[in-house]
Image 1 (cartoon, rainbow, N blue to C red):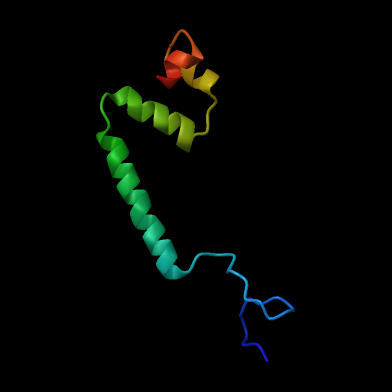
Image 2: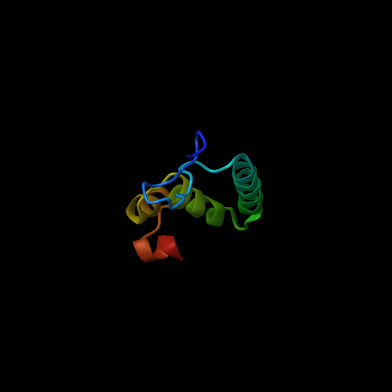
Length: 78
């Protein structure tokens, strides 16, 4: 008999939980805070902007090129 709330398949193989555990959520929050703090320290400020635009706002390289007024996509990536 399975305990209520356990994640198992019909063959008795235990499946990973779909949601992170409370301790995993806390660890992820700590890591996110560290990453945010390190991004804030990046110099020059354009480095921060590229990371924010690309990774946080998921803009294309073409959109970033236009936003940063760079002549080419390669220049936006550099």
